[in-house]
Length: 159
Image (cartoon, rainbow, N blue to C red; front, side, top):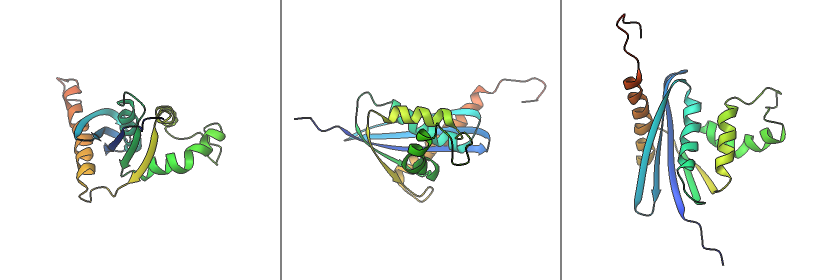
């Protein structure tokens, strides 16, 4: 008899200052009484790319197959995986308009990293006091804040 998969909750969020602009992503993972959180950021990106990156990075952090509940405030991500993704794959990664899917590189990565897991998707309203979502939002903004350290120094002042 197969052992049940460990159940992990992953709370994700993406943020962007300017769209496109500096962006960050945050992940909060919970398994039983353990927690892990991490974040990152990129220059010249969009909020949707950061939302996708947060989910990808959360799933990549899992070292084995798991039962996963992903909690996100991104309708873009949830509609993408629950409604659009199967059709995009059938249509060679094109939308109904025959145009290529936006952020196709990240959608393909997400499709790949989802394969080893049993995933349940849950939407939560952003900035509504949901404790774990607020923590993921804080981490995403920390990802942006940490980018400031990476801005090269320009003695002429043209950063």
